Length: 279
Length: 347
Image (tube, rainbow over all chains, first blue to last red):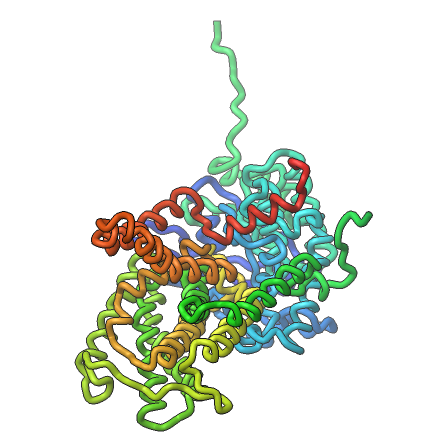
């Protein structure tokens, strides 16, 4: 497995007034891995993802998105220089190839599945008001060309039957899947998934786990996900970071995390052996 | 028997009117539009011209309010800038009106960029209040910068001519008005099915997600303001050249509210709804009027209360729409089509 980092966090600290949401977090996300962030409620998982995608501005530290090593494939967001995410607007972070899903689905409810995904292609399309208003020549060709890319993702995530459905009318589990599709449509090199399994039943979780693995293996997209379901996290992830009250208390492979005393204490919980009181 | 329409290419499915039935309806509508002026009385022709002009304005406002979700009470101000802009260009600089109208549109778009600046920080009702301020400022400027606008005096401009035809006749203006409305509708339809239009709707539905997916939210809001203002500015210019008299009273807050009523009754975020709403709001007073006049001989008292009935009916219709069909006439039209899709079966 290649170990050059895609993303580096160095001493990232985020405060809301007197509350320290993230407290000196440092770690690297390596190219091609599935990196999970776990922790109890309020530990700072979502704050961490929001800081990476530029929605929050940490007061201290550095979040660096590393440039892509020169690859043969032209498709995608080949960044040539490192990007300091703390000083970059969310839309430019997306442009640099970071896509995400949200914990509480943030789809465009009144748009069709197709339009949601086409919006995911936004950074790859060009054309201003005049060109779009005329819908002539290059603009028309580009829309059709990107429709083909979107159809490929629809195929991949098995939502063919839904492409013309209005997103707001879909069931929760399907909306989660459409949100994943929309993030994929960006052709990201770093995919952030905020609790992709939250609120799903076992079958939907299995589907989602399969998709996340396929995305990682077939498309080679580096994935950072936050999740509560320990079973899922242990099975999917290459490495896990554990947060507690905004601090990074452990980082390592699933096996290491499962036996780390600090983690067991803060999150996994002790298996209490009940000893019968002496008679 | 065929069971449906199936597409083999994305380009076919992505057409504006992919289904034969849709194209047929559009064809019938176009035919009616062409025949109409030859059989209509001058009175109905003048109403049709007002509908055509209001349709352009409603499309512009719908782009901003319905599609992008930025509530604006500044429609009157944008209309005024377009009207005075185009009027003064023809009057003072002797520009032909077909040139002054697009220039007035561009001037209004520039004004829209400035008036749209508060949308960086403000949403919903707060933004509405900010645009209300713009409305008041523009009204003040028009009534006080007498050297430019003639103040509260009416500004009389020469009647427009195109290819030797004088457009001061309703019959001649009709073709120009309808063509402009059709082009505006086509422009908005194309816009909304491609990159820029999608980003407008994305900002309305979920601006944070739009930003996280690479849409420059602030810039897109300003683009929406400018594009909307361009269309509204053209509407103002059309009003100016249609009436050939420009007065500030035509562009007050009242006008802004009337246009909002058009797009709400017609259907927010729809193109045909902009036309339906414009038609209803233009024709409604005329219909009430003619009903009142026919009652005058039988019930003389009706004539006296007519003005109040007009105001009341206007309010009542808007309330009824909000309660019964919040998605407007466009939704009603969709319901009718859905009804006939399976007719004569019940489902």
